[in-house]
Length: 203
Picture 1: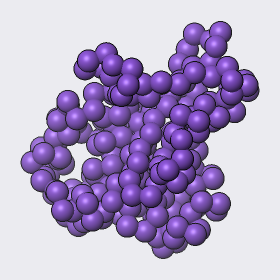
Picture 2 (picture 1 turned 60 degrees about the vertical axis):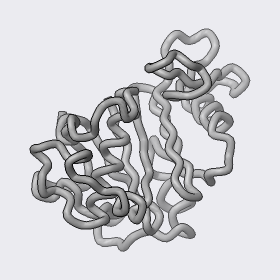
Picture 3 (picture 1 turned 135 degrees about the vertical axis):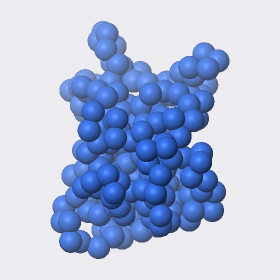
């Protein structure tokens, strides 16, 4: 499967993310991002980190399915221990067999939700500074990706892509990032507030 990141070639796999609206537009500010940009980047929506993620997912899934929010159930499922108190989020409507693809990510003051009616999905948002402080190429990069993340912005972008893929797979950090090659997945970089990177992965 081919990556759909904003990068254009193997040598630019982790190019700093740009607006999907205008490839020449500079990084989007917080004030601009909510109404003008995030609203058109389906299937991702941005919220404040203090908002109730389950309420948001229930509303978004209800809108997607054309069902009352009261008929949508959301929860968590941990693939490691089977707990319903944590783990990968899920959502489904009463009377419908198929689950809707949902994912969450929190960083700083930002909460991202992702909803897809046709595919599994994973989303991630990261602080560029936080990734830079903990960067270890041996832990993050697949051997074929060596040299693809040389700046702080590129490293945060790569980290987001890997986290989004792990959430898509439902494995979390049980699967080493370095064992995953971004080019094997459908990954989309999305606009993020200044100082952050964001991406989602589909299956």
